[in-house]
Image (cartoon, rainbow, N blue to C red; front, top):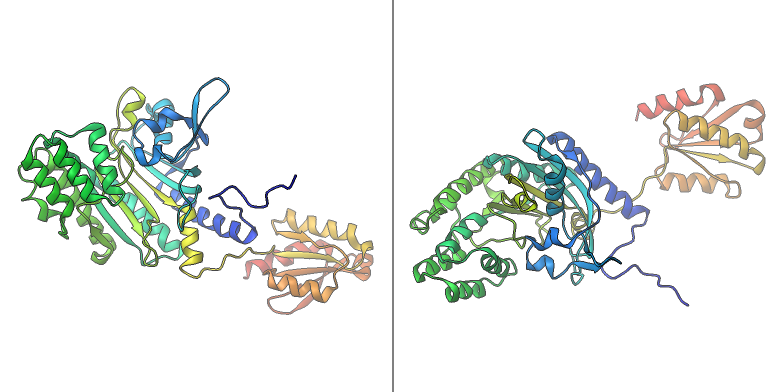
Length: 431
């Protein structure tokens, strides 16, 4: 039998270079988590089907990896993380003081047709702020994206802003709520706005309200305040609009006017959104690198008290592809700080001792093996970014010394074994 060489469709192997970039992006995300006070949590990659069936939306439900275990329980590979974190909060964390800031790094799975920026296995870095209704909690999610994008080399990002609450208020005036409203918003999210408008007209109890919804979706106003007259007769829309205006104004002040774009007809595919929604884009691809919004009704679906919540997911896999394919970033792995090279087989035991001393001092040390000529070893070490090569020959072994070549300066020095680590540590500190 011939075994497959490629991974399953839509999933990726990472070689050392890709993995190094992947880990760098995750490291930036973890740094942002610490800076904003978000506590990491983890949920299983396999979840109950019902966790996502309740409010994830048709676009997610139709692309889940779903299966039954041997006991007939319906399970899925998680397609996203917000619903899973909501379950975790409702089951274990809801009695803790509020607000709570929870974060995660997780791989998720969707049975989409693979294309640029869309994989069947992908990583998200997520931030969920639970227990706060203040619009500035929504603002914080966008600022998190700003700090991440700037740190990874996408400083010229832009933000697309909308408000699902405004849409739902108008749809309620049409007599369209629940799953029917979700159907409309799902069509808009998939770029089928005219179909959504026709669906509203066919189901609406009020021709006037349906007309207002068509105006909202088709509108190209730049400031949400310009919608006040259109929405003046819609119950509940004014409060939602005021919230949107506050978020919009704060983001334009904090990020710059050119970065924030309000789109009245914007919707996202997840049915649990109730308020402000946003997506973050780089200038070199029309695919969102991050997205999020407010989901005040989700946690209550798990039983007990409901909590206001807002969050964002940053697409680590998509950002990585954006950087390498569009921004020209070259994925590269870095070598260790030091390479210990025994010249002949007789120096191997001594070389192992030298490498051990360096590692105990916190210096990354890789052991080379005899066979490759010293000159070739030095050349390869330089290409990999190794700083020091410790050369171990018969003379060094017999005298209890180590010859160290600094590949940055070209200098070669000899140290007693006892002083090796302090010398290398001092030089590394001088980088």
